[in-house]
Image (cartoon, rainbow, N blue to C red; front, top):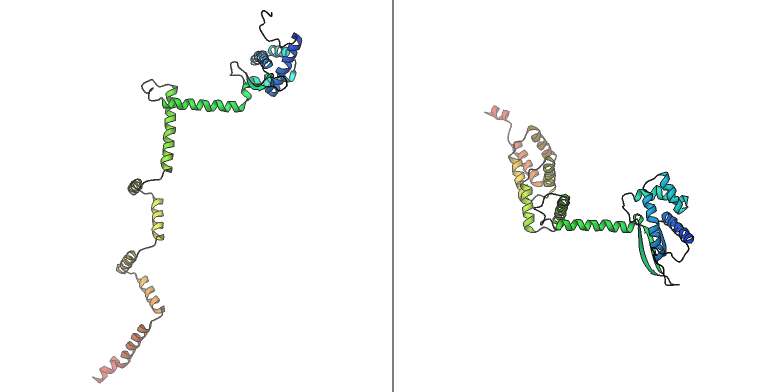
Length: 272
């Protein structure tokens, strides 16, 4: 009987066991993840976590103590330079053991042992879980309406603002009914137009095709408007330059014949 067996001896002598754990600890510090049997992983966890806690105080004494356990200068410098900074805010629990089934040869239980702060996949999963808890708090805001304002109420208010923004986006994307369109047209007509909006409307009116009634009205307004001297002169020039029709030529010939038949005024006066 092994009375007082407080830890797993791993079927090895004391020197062999210490050397093996020191070698495994230094390889875990350098590679951040190793594969081993489950009993060795559990023994390594109790061996390396006190050393990581010791590395948080960077002093000559703590470095010498850690080196007496690891016997590897590269592992000590890696531990005090990088891992201690990344694990500074974590109060213990620096490693994680993941079971991966049994080994083919001897059916031994195998496992991964890794440093918690270096697994990026599981760190991303933790962030997603935190976001879900915030949504749950937002759903229970009605129950906490009478309570005094706390950090949770501030988070719920932020979530309500985000929900409103999402609702506005969905309303903009949704197809509008005929009633909604008529209401929007009314609001646009009532709203005061800026100078840019007026200029754009004038351009669109000029480009739009005019109906027959609008054309007739424009011609009437042009005829009624008083013409200036320059416009009269230009019209006379255009009339002289314009090609004459057959009817116009006949009328002009008649006028010329009448003028030839009528004697000049001086001859009439002499006869009298």
